[in-house]
Image 1 (cartoon, rainbow, N blue to C red):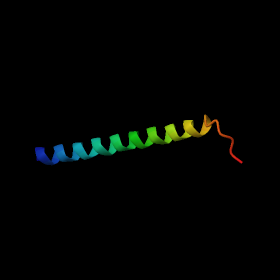
Image 2: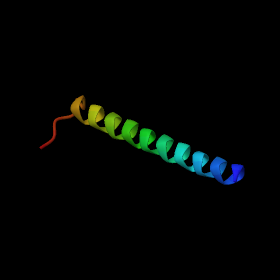
Image 3: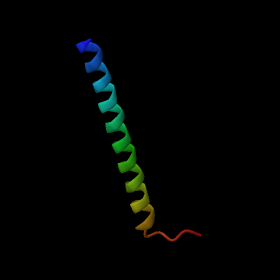
Length: 41
């Protein structure tokens, strides 16, 4: 039972970390677009 709980917690932690990474990448892409010095036609 303890192993199952450990696996579930590890999976939840990995999902949380992936979500945070994806949010960070999205935020970085928004900043890159907003501060892009090249004018778009």
